[in-house]
Amino acid sequence: MKEKKINIIGAGNMSYAIVSGLINSNYKKDLITVCAPSINNKNNIIKSFGIKNSNINTHYSDQADIIILSVKPQSITSVCQDLNKINLSKKIIISLLAGININILTNLLKQDNINIIRIMPNIAITTNHGIIAMYVMSKINISDINFIKDLFSRMGMVYQLDKESDIDIFTIIVGSSPAYFLFFMEAMQKKIESMGINQCDAYNIILETINGITYLSRHWGNTFNKLRKLISSKKGITESAISIFKKENLSLIIANAIDVSMNRIKDLKNLKT
Ligand SMILES: NC(=O)c1ccc[n+]([C@@H]2O[C@H](COP(=O)([O-])OP(=O)(O)OC[C@H]3O[C@@H](n4cnc5c(N)ncnc54)[C@H](OP(=O)(O)O)[C@@H]3O)[C@@H](O)[C@H]2O)c1
Image 1 (cartoon, rainbow, N blue to C red):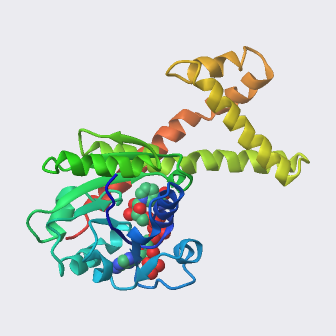
Image 2 (image 1 turned 30 degrees about the horizontal axis):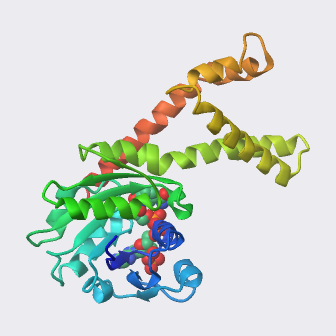
């Protein structure tokens, strides 16, 4: 793989995850830089990885082959104002931003020949077990596409999408859903602890249960339903708990929560440019 210089704009959670995923996969530290307004030695990325950094966005962007936008949607206008001070035509811009589509980005980056790839990763890229959805502007050449695919394959499983609008669905199933599962695990841990199991055991039991069921599910085809039914036999103990989930319509609660998140993504698209 040819080496390319990567500058990351933003030094928060996702930037940390990317730097960690790249360094774990032996990407050269010297090829990675990070910029954010208040970055200093106390920042986790700098404390953990000691990579070159600046509080001026144009500082390393100028020399970078790849610029990764990893800021909140609310900051994108000011980041693009900074980036418009340099020539972006030979660079690949990778955006992680939820809801901010290529149309909004090209309006903000007031230059010709902008190459944008949208990426939607989840936090598990930190330890190279993530999922990464990717949508590429049609004019980007195949060698650049393959480079970016290889780059993110170091951090997890990459899905290349045909339609940009599918990024919104992947924002939920890839980006947000880890928090749903963690919420369920938190509730389980709290209840188990209240029944007298110590915190450490409760934590490990939940983790191992998820590990075990993940392995087992792989042998049961492309559905979770059959295996779930197998272990919740009629009038049994497990079924008595599932019947509460059904009575409270947990499936509908999950579907409603996803709809609310989809609407939140639509709100981000109305960002004034
Ligand atoms: N978190 C996830 O699981 C996840 C998953 C998929 C995609 N995403 C996307 O990833 C993006 C980043 O999310 P995050 O969770 O990493 O956010 P975060 O932790 O809040 O980090 C945002 C970073 O942006 C920096 N920043 C703010 N204004 C800036 C500016 N004008 N120029 C340069 N940097 C600036 C902040 O620096 P200061 O602290 O100095 O202000 C901070 O380091 C979001 O757009 C989100 O949609 C997140």
